[in-house]
Image (cartoon, rainbow, N blue to C red; front, side):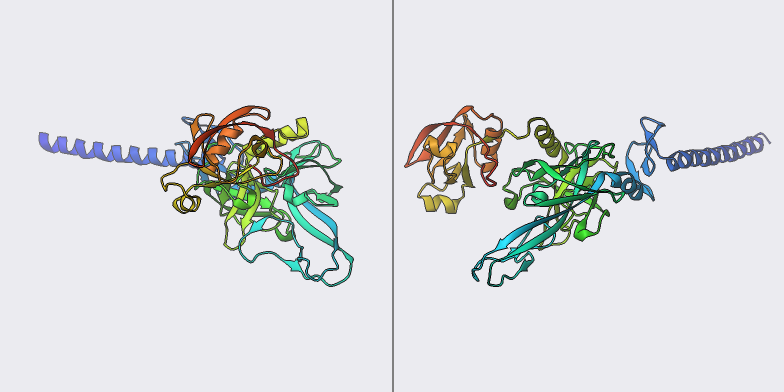
Length: 405
């Protein structure tokens, strides 16, 4: 009897424990569902509310809700503008003159790309029209966009999301990073929240908003595909964000957003011979350039004026040097540049800059950019079988050139 009684107690205890566990699970599920549905931030526990559409689970990881993208797009769209531009060009009467491009003034590259209008004989004027995007940077009418969007415009029209139209004027530009600032006569404008591009990673969700092919405020969604992309067509000046969020001609100048709705990049280029390979200027770069343009009107940027090529076996063979020679080859010199004035020559092999060994043109650029215009630096070159030191005074990047380093 004693054993039977103990058995009944054990079974009863197990049943009670199971019921309690089930109740706790139901209550916990209801608790988390109730809080997550409201969008709350986990900071050790679920306490701090966040904007609608964003869900952060108890571990602090953000997850997508049903309306996350729509909520972000609705919130940010008022700070995204359409930019329509026009410019007039006189056609040459020569039948051998190259064709004039037309359509959306956007940056895209790849073999066999671009739309052209064939020229006919005779002197006449052609009006070019294009479309791009922009981001309201300040409430008093300053708009951030790409330099290539407004670079050759005679007339700029900016259309807000509420359909108001303003005449725009370029008040700052930087061809080096392909950024420009347009001013419109308006106040109390909605400004997007700027994030940072410092800690972003490939695989993170991103959202693009812009004016592709004239279809205003188009929203696309994707991920960060890669970081640190360098495009020769953009002069290797900026390490770009690569994304597979659909970007098309007209998207240039529009924002690339993270899943919190913060701007992390300015869309600037697409790979025209591929699908969903787009590029954006990191917002940290864009913010630095924009703030300097607004405060100083120009960018002071260290400049040598050398065109460089990384050394490889084939290049070493063509130069008649050992295949294990290290350094960066001077492929050319800009006319009247600091490098040319210092005595550097085409074919020189740069091996050290300020005592630091260099193997790639990017390493040379990094050392140069750590100095200011007016600084003098020592460059160690290999020429005619001998090592030679060269003293070069760093100049300021010329604003009328787009290809110097």
